[in-house]
Image (tube, rainbow, N blue to C red; front, side):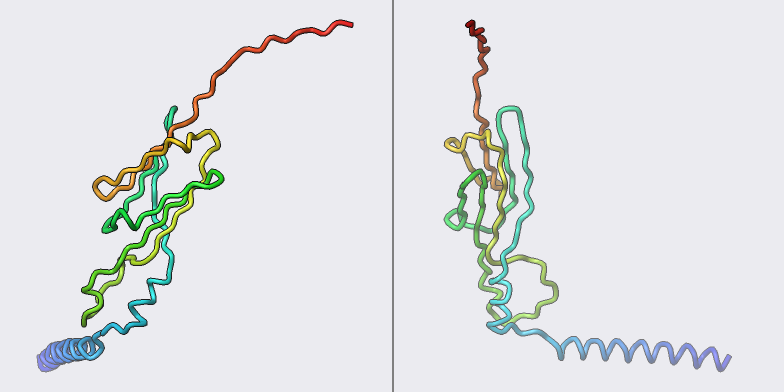
Length: 155
């Protein structure tokens, strides 16, 4: 009985001491951002996931992009490669004194290159931003078919 009580007491004591140490350690190591910490991720270039949907008459590209101004998005097409670039700026709260508990958001420049098939009409590309989705619609060229008569050359 005495050993059981001692074991129970020591278990509670060490659990309590560990929790005290953990709370002290966590508060002692609070993270305050420095300018170089904030700028660290701004130099990285991120790549966003996207979907490419091909239909009989067009290709549609859907890219989820949130918290971006339209003026910060750039779409260019060169040599059948569509390049999507934009920059997501960090909110002002990141520049205040804070404790970073979880860091999963991407801030800074994004870039994505998509190799397109040759049969697209690049003069009629349409892009819209709807519900934080960039939707790019590219119609395919319509090629006319024609039967060609073959003539026989006689000597």
